[in-house]
Amino acid sequence: MKTKYVFWIALFLALPIYAGEDVTPMVQEEFKKAQADVTAEWKRVTGRVQELLKAKAKAVEEAKKKAEGQTKQVELLKKYSLLLGTRYRNDKGEYDKGIELTLKDSENLNKMLRSFLSWTPIQGRISVGEARRNIDWASARLVEMARFNTEPTETNNSDLELITHQMKELEIGRVKVETMAKALDLPLDGAKSKGKSADEGEKERSNSSED
Image 1 (tube, helix red, strand yellow):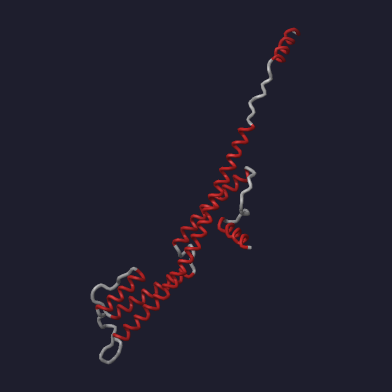
Image 2: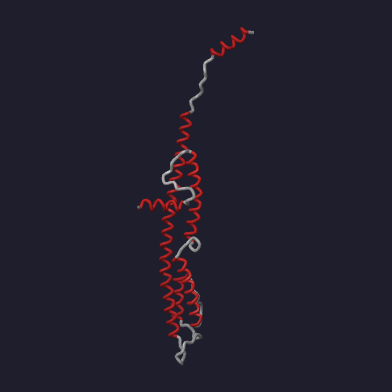
């Protein structure tokens, strides 16, 4: 029995020791690849945020310019309404809203409203009173549009609404990338503090660079 054990021990000692393949380079390569992928995605997200911030600033600027133009259009409509009130008078010299609008005034009014609101309200014969009511409606509409465009937000401006939606989607991507970077112990250039949106983070970095 003892001889049998001695035989197996001798056989075991005679076998070559298998250390296994060294997988360290493979692991390191995959780790670096994952870090590179996360860095590339981070650059894409932050680059897109910068593009959207520029688009947002441009949309606000354009809206304010529209507001200025709409305010001027209101003044022009009011001036033309005053002109109609002065022009259409009866034999007693009093304004008469039942007098038929001339073809020339109909064309002029349609031209103005088509230019301002893409609207052509006058078709056929119309009284001067109806023409001035159309002017009042158009003026009120332009005043409302100017009010929105003076203080454009994502609740009253289509461009800003679209940009805000895209920013929210990018925020989800930002959080995902930062989580992956933290797991990989990877520092990200310009990473934001937890809880700050992409918009807020980019503004903060812009302010820091200006200082």
